[in-house]
Image (tube, rainbow, N blue to C red):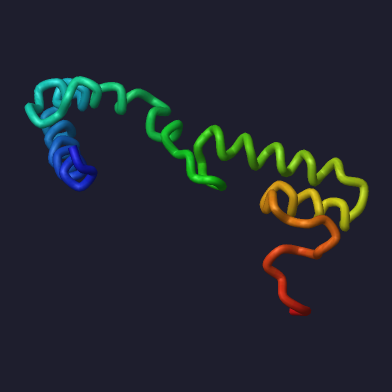
Length: 106
């Protein structure tokens, strides 16, 4: 089911669930347009684990950022921290070439 259609279906189920004191899982199970795998999407944490955008809120992107920060904090000097950050953020970056994306003084 396309996202916009699913959004519309869920948008109509939530108020119905609240007004009639029926659990959302019961409504999802009973709705003809929703498939059986829709129930898994209601599980706590299901939405956040699907977030995989770099720098996003999902477990994998957060773990990557944590590793980057640990490496930066362990670097002995500011220049080493900048190079460490640059290597993690820009894998093709050449050490000693400055901060990627910065063109001249600010």
